[in-house]
Image (cartoon, rainbow, N blue to C red; front, side, top):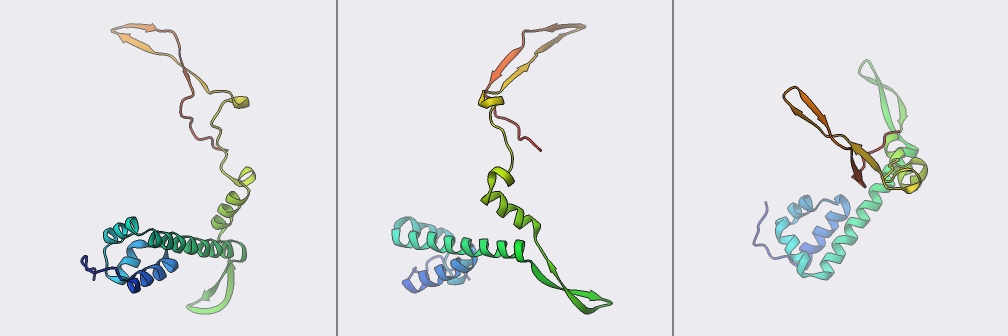
Length: 157
């Protein structure tokens, strides 16, 4: 149960940070110590050391999650194989999405998303639009409008 008026003692900070290192989840870590996330964020703003420890806890959790993603993508996870309700063997299952995301991060030129934000040779994008006005049965064509440097649409390969 969360008690909004509970004082954030050194012991509670330690428990919060310990859980944050495991989960990287502020809300669940706050519940563990019975203090609201609002109160924790207020303490974070006021206490530079607490903010630094908080950031380090998140970084530590992120590093561990990254290692686990790598392990699952490259080394796989052993899962039981069932036949007629009984375990008859094991198989190693690899998480290709995790492996591809790791490759995209490590080798973005080769495995990352390909998005061109400029025109050919780095030149600005040039778009032309025609404005057509309809008046009864009459259609009038105006001079093309040039738009330079619009927000580009993603390029799918």
